[in-house]
Length: 240
Image 1 (cartoon, rainbow, N blue to C red):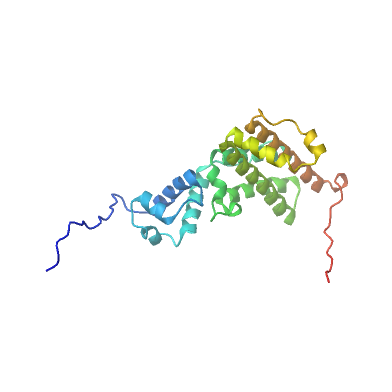
Image 2 (tube, rainbow, N blue to C red):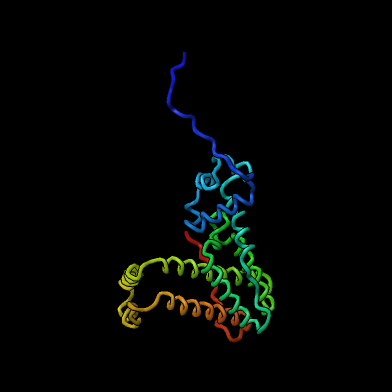
């Protein structure tokens, strides 16, 4: 006869509502907002849903597919459109400001697409809007693609860095500043204003404005070659 045991068989977790693709995406979106893409696992998704770890696989092939669905969900929920009035330079600057605002408010947006910011649904939408403004400005062909991607990469990088830095304490940011100051030439270090006591948010406002102005200067130079410095062409040398 089998021996009696006091051990209880594990209970199956029950759900009151059917598991759907949209529910999985919603839960994944919440998890990514809490800890980022890298911190999310299929086990976490299943635990948050109250299901077996194999259950999400009946709706998605892998984690990357779930991340993409969560990114689509997040992008649809965010209002992003190009300004309707003004010259192209004004509209470009306003669109850049709007993209930064959305990324600051929803930092998870730029991280979707299997961990690649360039393939996130939000960035795809932003890319299209930037390209539209650049087409109206007069750029054509590959110049539109390259200029739109360069703009988007710049905005995404600034927003990502800003979000991380604002999470740090003022002392952490001061230590970072002191570290890179050690590697500057003496004349450059002497020319920089003191950073202690300056608001990190204010510094990023100034940095963002500088970056957008630089982007605009480059675009104007592309559209008016006579006023722009000559393009640099990489020289290809044969090595022996």
